[in-house]
Image (tube, rainbow, N blue to C red):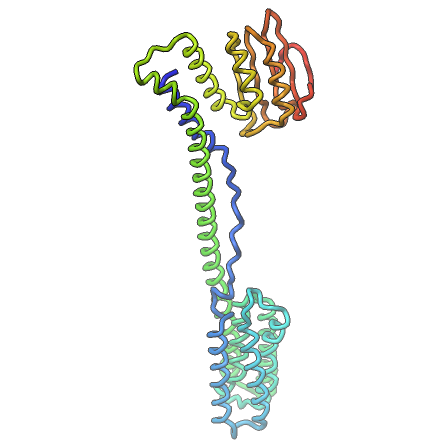
Length: 365
């Protein structure tokens, strides 16, 4: 065995360990869309209450222009309550009870305001405009269907108002445009927000994948380092003897060949390179038996103890010839096959996961 063989064994071991490290990706945490939009925050609540306050100021300024201005005070109270509900610090979609209340705000404000609104002064429909604005924001909070239901009813009330007050088309459009514009802006805002949230989720998914890959790499490096330390401990004394220029006697050469065979087993069939199989292979090889361990088990790391004991029992009596042990790919009725060519007789056994013989016949595997 040479130092090059050991280096090759170490490299192959590292590759094998890295390839078999499980990397189970976690599902990225959901993005809180309310926090992305900012509507579920205390700042948003104060901003919405400020909007309601501007309506209160306008009510005072126009108090004498309405037949029943106290109804606008009721509309103002409903708007303030909707400000609190619309800015609830909950994730989207907004809770159902709050959704119903905010969706009804433009309808309530239309009922309270429109009957006393002069078609000649559509700009005085501030309460209706604020209600529709809040309805549009309801789309941003993840409730577009409820928002548009309220908006459609509010628009219908505008048409009723225009008919009863003989409003012109321009006057009707001025009031109806308040509602339609608010809901269209809400829909556009919601669309932009969805794209923003999708981008955030994509970035988080990439971060999770990168973290999983990094963890897998670290685990592979740690496992490889442990494997290399084990190999180094086994081969160190012999390599030092060779490096010092010492001459190996027959026993030491036999030990070197045995060590090299063990290293090959660890690389090609890690699941089989366990006791008591290792000890049985050592004894068989010292008698001149050619032992070949193969692993086609798709990354199987360990085998059940009964299987290892049964394999060792089949290898131990062999003193010449050849033994081939193979871990089978998944989906087979057997876990391991053992082929023994000894004293001119060939036998084969297939073992289950419990170590029992699945079949024993001429080798046709």
